[in-house]
Length: 98
Image (cartoon, rainbow, N blue to C red; front, top):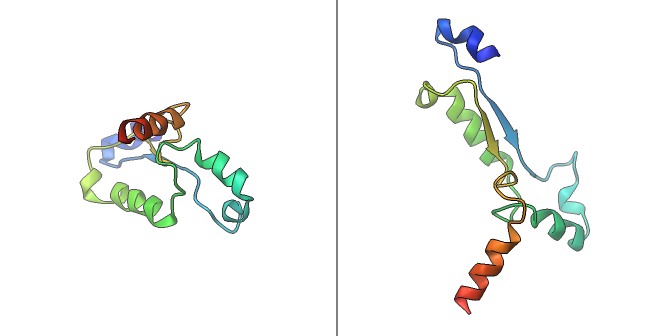
């Protein structure tokens, strides 16, 4: 792995996994309402990300603030990988507020 090869020189190597960010390439924002809703239901935060949120992570990883982080993959997807059925948490929360 790159982090292991570059560590002796004090170089960190990380990667990031961006989630569903509407762009002109993927056309998420242009999908029909039901298709958009179905995709959003797979996200723990249940909202689209935006490029600035991904950029925030990249800036952090490029800064001295992350100097002790290396060899890792950071998920910046609104919780896509956090749970298989995020809708259940929303159902429970709705039941508690009723």
